[in-house]
Structures are given as C-alpha cells and as structure tokens.
Length: 71
Image 1 (cartoon, one colour):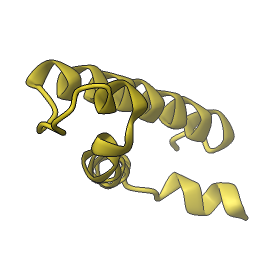
Image 2 (tube, rainbow, N blue to C red):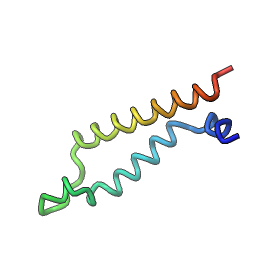
Image 3 (cartoon, rainbow, N blue to C red):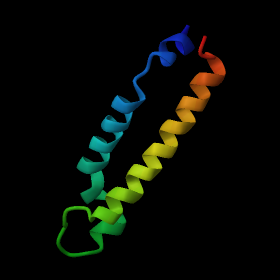
C-alpha cells in the first residue's frame, strides 16, 4: 500500500522541500562554520547540493518505478 502512495509522490515538490531544508541548515554545517562570518551559501555550494538532491530524487524515481511500473 505504501508503494502505491509513493508512486503518486511529487518528486519536484520533494526536491524543493529538501532544498529548503538545506538552505535553512547551511549555516549549521561545520565546513561553512570555519569562516568567522556565516555567509550566504555560494552558488557553487548550491549547485553541488542541487546535483546531490537531483541524484537522490533520481534514486527515488527508480525505486518507485521498480515497485510500481508505469502502466
């Protein structure tokens, strides 16, 4: 039953939610805290994170498609 629900999951929305979580948590990251002032994440960091999120979403997509093949 859970897998049927997952099949209807909006992956784009999931990606947005993960990105929001990352945006709010970036200052807490130890790597970025080494600098004395907490700066807004650089575009490079954002790019790196969105590519990681994209890979996570692709894995979810594959998993969902494995469990619920598109008819």
